[in-house]
Image (tube, rainbow, N blue to C red; front, side):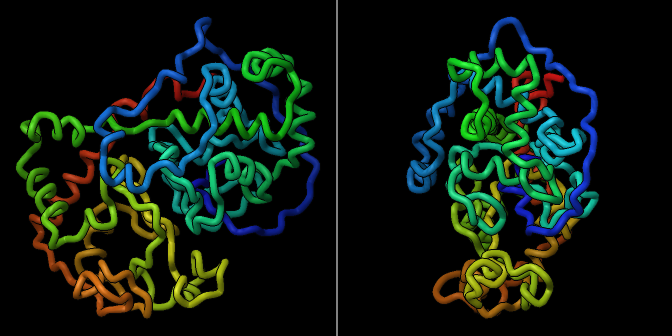
Length: 370
């Protein structure tokens, strides 16, 4: 679960120390010709997108190499990165689900439920601060944390380097990636980061619609698109640009008092009432693949999410102003009520599903090599 990432932002919890024999070691099946990960680039339209130009330039500066990302792919899917050899990064980040796991909260080697919902993995190069509470800067500083977490993979990093050193197939992979067979924490982090940085998502029906004026959209999808971008719904004020995201954590009115409900988000780190319930604003790309929703997975469906933002935003002393009656100014305004009709709700759900990528969930170069 290397990526409770942006996702499995989990709180620390004590795990019993046990001695567990590792499972039988598997060897990956890789193509004779290494995939050209270093050739993967975002479309020109992305590079010219005003929102990404405004928010961009803050992602990881790690250079992706073909062999480095190949090694990262193997590490990502290898359960030997966990203490008992049963959990890999892909356990909580399944490719077909846009690298989430479909669970309200994930379960790792401890058998205990983790603290938050596993976040999706894609377009990480446009994200500087990671985890739901944005506590970590840079993917290279994030990828090892779930490996060490007692409820996720529970693996001591010194023990991990020793374990991988004893596996013959990793020698060649590290030589190809780094020039020699030495296995270190920094190299593991680099390879994993390179692979995750190659999880690009920009090939959806919505993207095709931008090119052909949405001629293949259904009437419901067109209605949903109009609602999303009409200004009154304010959807694209928090989920903007080509990546349909924001770099800022917001308070979105799930609770009147988040801390009292058990999770204060950023507020748990700062102890500042202004941050009570402040969580990372996720990209809406692949949103139809990543249920359940919110930091705690409380909403099982997109319809649940739409109904919440239409009718049920809770008052909060620092509710984001975009969700308040005025839509701008000071935070903490009375919640805005969209009061969408049944047709509008179903249309918005239909439109949100057009953000699902058509390539990434099945791409061979991102798949399990074991």
